[in-house]
Length: 502
Image (cartoon, rainbow, N blue to C red; front, side, top):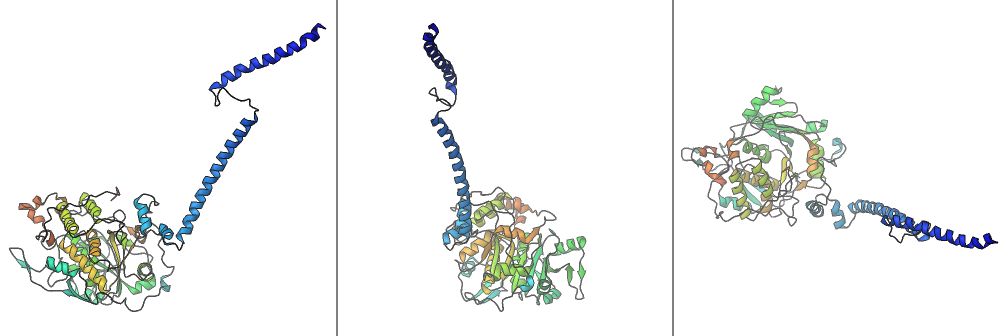
């Protein structure tokens, strides 16, 4: 009886004991994930909370993957969209893509990219006739004028002695024009008679040049039989380079005494027109239409380059497909000529104060740094390749471009965009992306680095006294002829270096 009365009491003690035994557990766990109000493990609220968190993570991951998939699908769709803004996102030559690139939002450009050339050179249809000349219809050249006197002697100069007024008038396009364009009588750059006869047959040509022994000819590859018959491959060389080539590679002579290195017909030029080899190299590069007047189409490549794409495919891709007549690659690093000039000074490509003077003249004449407001994707080309139909307007552009190179520094990339600007949109050209440029060729290093004293000049005072011998005697006259305006107050725009490599 006594045991029966005590049993309920023992139950209460056990229950109290159970509760007391639970308190230390709750107290020890206060520093855990949950607060001191921790619920028992089997509490339904906690189970729901755990399951909900896991579901939240899974849903977030799925939504993130869906977002990535939607963006990729939008990108693919926008590239093919008829909506101009959306399709412009994928157009690497359009202003939307360029703006994204400037903001760092566009993908990093490839060094090389596939070229959308046709599959078979034998199936290329060559356009009949010539592109009609709509703006300039008759172009002739000044070939004789008064000699230049340097104080001790008089002599003819290859580029002529163009005045500031003549220069200004040449930028006003008219149906009939007569301009300076090199090759003044007794000015130099003379071709052998046998070569003059040979190039008369050249309607299509690939031209290149080596001056001062910097390179040896690199043989083109992947050239079709059709192109070998259709194109002349002409390598223009000076006397120094001809001697260097003969000492290092095999030169064969044909029955007419023409000289050959593989596919390349060597075209020696006698009596170099300039003191500076780099300026001499601009003659065949820019004035291809003057050196080879019978040519209708030309592809210029620098002497350090090995052509690896059939030239017919190049003409079809860059000219005929979209009815262009002039194509040139975009510079890899720079869009503004002032940034290019800054890079030229840092790399000692020419006398720094003369580059500054060159740019001050352009800036005073209204040449602004490149921006999205301009109608071109860049003011700076990669001048190692030029693809042209020799129309009257294209020939005039080349003359005006060369006149700037003749008048100022030999850095032709600084002058290209300026001439485009002065022609006020009348000169049309196709500037293709730089990664295609690197897919057209294999670039070989020069056999040696070019170096001249003028490249190390830091101040105009260094040209005085004994330093006067560094002045070029036959080119760059615009750097030493008084300019009609006062340039002392001209401050060049600030340069923001967008590339360490540039």
